[in-house]
Image (cartoon, rainbow, N blue to C red; front, side, top):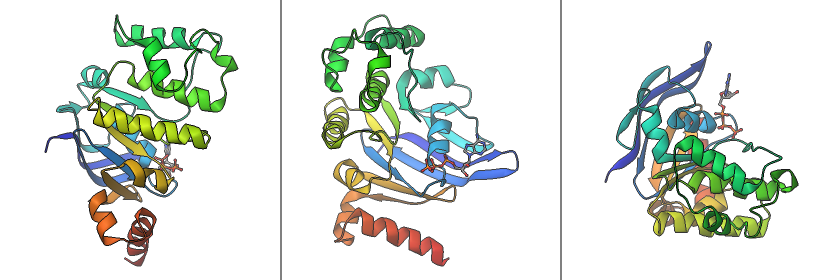
Length: 241
Ligand SMILES: Nc1ncnc2c1ncn2[C@@H]1O[C@H](COP(=O)(O)OP(=O)(O)OP(=O)(O)O)[C@@H](O)[C@H]1O
């Protein structure tokens, strides 16, 4: 199977603080990859490195067959990322915010109305973002990641701030993006139940290194209690070392 993300022996240090250590990750094209780990384990840092928002200290990062750094522009055209709280031009409408993003990406034509409908924001295109709730902002952030039809989506805690209906809508949207649009999704989350619903593969990062990458089918077969059971077993195993 083709790896859309291939990370080998990646290290990232901030000053003398090495937060990613000898980390190796493989994400298959077309899958939903659930990226799990405790607070501070390094999930956001790895997603930023894949998105080219940070440069590695050492190691290899290959995205869509191109190596980072050096192919940043070409890689950016193929990815959509929602990392940390999305920022918008508050006085501008949802449509205007998406138009600015498209202009920045150099894309002339895109289905803005259709994308807003798809993320559950119908009829809001003219409304200034300053009037949006937290959940609406999160949905608009996701609209911005998918509007240019990227091959790879990097989503850092994408269901934060959503109510139960919003969480269900996002679950359905993420599944349809993978299964109907053929996108690959790499999703970090602490909400194990959601990852269990949608992910094909799970990667667990502990202290800056991915210690396990396992197919969800195998987790379901070997851990009758499900993903939470698996996750805590991995964490305990690590603690015992
Ligand atoms: N710009 C930075 N400068 C210095 N240290 C940083 C920087 N960004 C992240 N770190 C440190 O790197 C480590 C990993 O942080 P990161 O945000 O990647 O973890 P995380 O797994 O996403 O955590 P959470 O689940 O809490 O979001 C933490 O110790 C954090 O303090």
